[in-house]
Image (cartoon, rainbow, N blue to C red; front, side, top):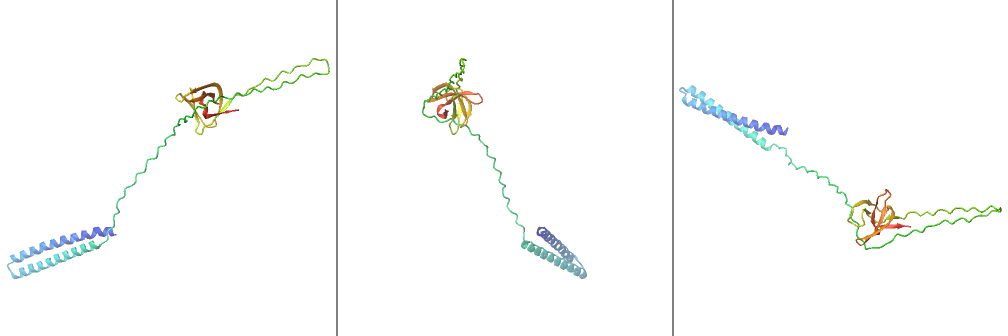
Length: 215
């Protein structure tokens, strides 16, 4: 409703001002007619018309001024200032962690412990009361379990193709991985290296300080 009044009141004030100007023009025209009139009766009519037009003009101007005053005191809606819309931040890009080379430790020359072969005792030949010659029981064939080692590093260790830290990285061995120890050993870059084989059959080298031999 307030918005309609804010548009309607100035429009009416403008119409009233235009009407006042129109009546003023008619009043001046009546004055010219009064001056040109020859008879007193015509002059009286022209004078009366001039007064009527002046009254109408003054009334129109007063109405226009009243409307402008009303418009000045009419409340107007406040237009809130436009606030910039914050742009959403781009999603963070996940950076995959890169395995770091295990720190170099002082040389610790370790030799794999050689498991002792256990031989089952041979059963002594038994003799019967008869004259049948004793039968010898064949001795059990001794078996040796393969030597294993466990990765003992909090971050794991690389299985490399050659016994050095610059050779090809075959597989990242996590802490606690069980490896089969192979006979080959080497020393390079102030480190002792052990050739091992993973459970999947992958053969490579690991630094001795990062594994623990299993008895």
